[in-house]
Structures are given as structure tokens and as C-alpha cells.
Image 1 (cartoon, rainbow, N blue to C red):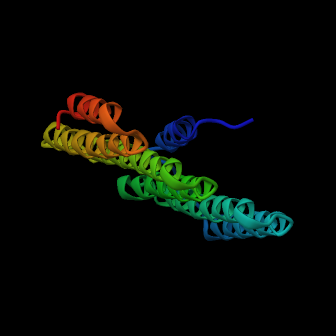
Image 2 (image 1 turned 180 degrees about the vertical axis):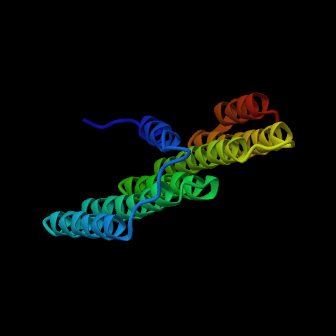
Length: 192
């Protein structure tokens, strides 16, 4: 069963936002045990990828590397319990999901691949913007609302630009009047 990329990323970001804001730090032995467990999971995932070939193997490896990177970032966030470490964990998830999405796009060709890449970039841009807003809220102080509002404004602008770029790319597969109308709708929808 395949889940849409947006659903997977939204779930991952939701999970990342659930990281505890103020956790007790872990002992060095606990951290070492977790690091060893993460490494073992990564090694097992890599071995599972060996039975695949072509782009399926590339996707599998991207997932394995991404999961390792996310697990390490989440471990750091649990151990340090700072706004910055929680932000880094969220960004690790966003970057890992984007790398997998790019690999999935390699199965396509031509304009379909270009559209897939632009869509993946739009999802990544939105997820990064959401993580920045969450960090601004997490670090809130006397200027907290201003920082959150600014992060939200910047994120919305970046996200809309990425979505507009993806919409323009979808229009490229069309010709003549259909292409012109598609481009006009894209400009109107995204205020360009």
C-alpha cells in the first residue's frame, strides 16, 4: 500500500512535534545503548536493501540512511531537550523524506519526473517552514509572537513559490491554449 508523500511527511512532522519539551537528560550508558541500537537497525536495513536492485535499491538505501539520521537527531533531542535540538530533529526528518521522495521520482521520466521533483520540493519547503515556525514558537520570549509571525510569513511565501513552480511544471506537458490557460490558472492561484 502506497501512501501519498504529503501524508507521510505530515505524519512525520506531527510525530516530531511531539518530542518532549523538557525531558531528563540521559546517562552516557543510555545514550551509548541507543546509539548502538540505531547502528544495528541501520546495518539490518542496509542488508535488507542488498536483495534489491536498480532504483528500488536506491530508494531502500535512502530510507535506511534517512531513518538512521532521524533516529540520531531524535536521540540528541531527547538527550539535550533544547529548542535547537528539537528543530534539528524535525529538519532531519524533512531532509530524509525529501531524499526518499527524490529517489522515488527517479522511477519516472520526462515531464512526469520534473513534476514529481517540483512536488517533492514543494512538500519539503512547506515542511521546513512548519519546522521553523515551531522553533520560533518553542523559543518564544518577549518577542516570541513577532518571531513566530515572521517565520510564518516567510514560510508561507517560500511554500507558495515552490507550489507555483510545481504548478508551472505541470503546465509544461500541455500545448497551445491548454498550456496558456494552465499557466494563467497557476499565476492566479499563487498570486504571481
